Length: 240
Image 1 (cartoon, helix red, strand yellow):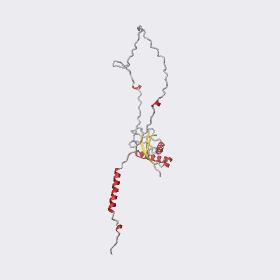
Image 2 (image 1 turned 90 degrees about the vertical axis):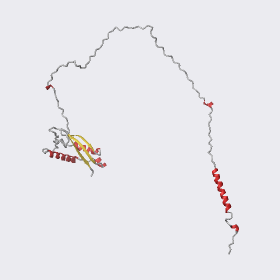
Image 3 (image 1 turned 90 degrees about the horizontal axis):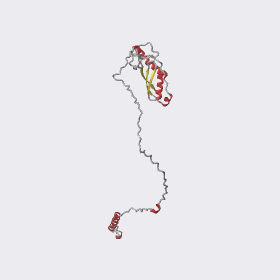
């Protein structure tokens, strides 16, 4: 059976023409896009003309003050009279106070009994670890050297535990730590020169108060001579 087709219904009949027309339109649009030019807008400046005739300013009139010139200086005399100095001037002679080799010094007889010699006692510091006779804490009398040294350390610990009081402010703020205390047992047996180093001034102040309350002791001796003895001890502040 043969298919019947209307020749007017052929869709590919004018395809070549349509292709040429479309290509022409595209080329024309491309050419116009390449040939397009843009120009900046011209900004017109407006000049303000000022009339120079209106710039004249009125200059105030000034008055010249005429002052009287100063008088001329006095003229020098025509004849200068010379007066001779008839008074005699006495010259003051200043004697030298330096001593030369020719100066004779009077001999003075001195007796040894006329000279007072004062022996200055030097404050010697001997560390606690090497001193021959350690300071004696009250209650440690009559013991040997080794026992006196051990008793001293024990009494210091007992004194700190007895007088220890945690600062309230430091306790509220949670401040704790170890305070290193150094002090000197003087030649009179009293504690002085207390130095502290710790994490907070509140703890240092409390450690200084405890050491300052130590009782008087028998001073230490080195070669049968009373001397000052430095001593160091740490005080631990710890919150439970």
